[in-house]
Length: 372
Image: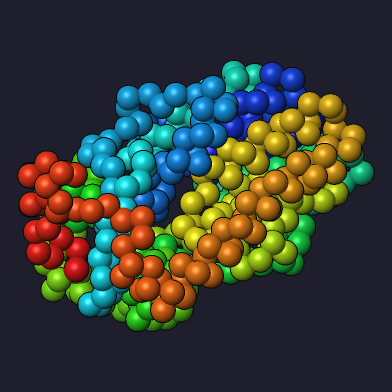
């Protein structure tokens, strides 16, 4: 009988296991074989950029990124484009370009040895008992049950744990991204706003000699056609894309209000995307995953009695942060407001002025058709 079973060993689950693993009997579950070498060409559908908020949380947790998590190129600006023929602006942003699979595995590597891991296992459901929960797992064709006094859902946007404790659903998108060979990756990250394709946004990320093109799309039968239309517009605008290497897809949440945020109840806690903690303006979730894990660990430090209430109250600051980003999102994704802001040049980098950027950077940034 475990004290706590954590379903999902991404940033939220691995961080919680690291923080409580020496004082609690913990079971950590993930469908990935995180105890084996990473499969070639596979990983989470994620642009793999560590935002400043996530960097700040790593600092608060006393962590520094190892070299093998970082990938080239490390860039310092984003080119925002209003498609199909609107304005384009450059904005300074301090993202860190990472290998997301390596990042997850690094966090798992710091989990204490006393934590029991069930990797390569799919979570199939849970059943409440008099002493806690029976947790159904499947490894290949083998089904078995583990028991725990409490359960933490850290199983991401499609959380099965969440479905067991609430009917509240968060607005869902499907994130689709293609990896392309490219003869010349642009020297910036890209954010593309195209209302014909999505009411959210699309992105381009140079990574290890390839270029990722991705988009957050409404999950309907036309999603694939919309994504292909986006890629076609980028190509016709001059983006140089070679052979497609692979395509990835995954669910992506976008809370529409703080009522979408749910921290759990009756012995089941939710953290990270499973709780709905994702930025509605950018889709960024790693900072909330790390913060939520830290808050729940703090709530558990005083013992299991009352831990859920302590966690819910502590998570209030995350809800307030989401509320502020909801306001930002409503402005950013109102097409007329966004176009006016971009046309004004407010906050944009003065690319092309001789006193601001080196010649080579000015020429590469102004080359026609980097994105659109």
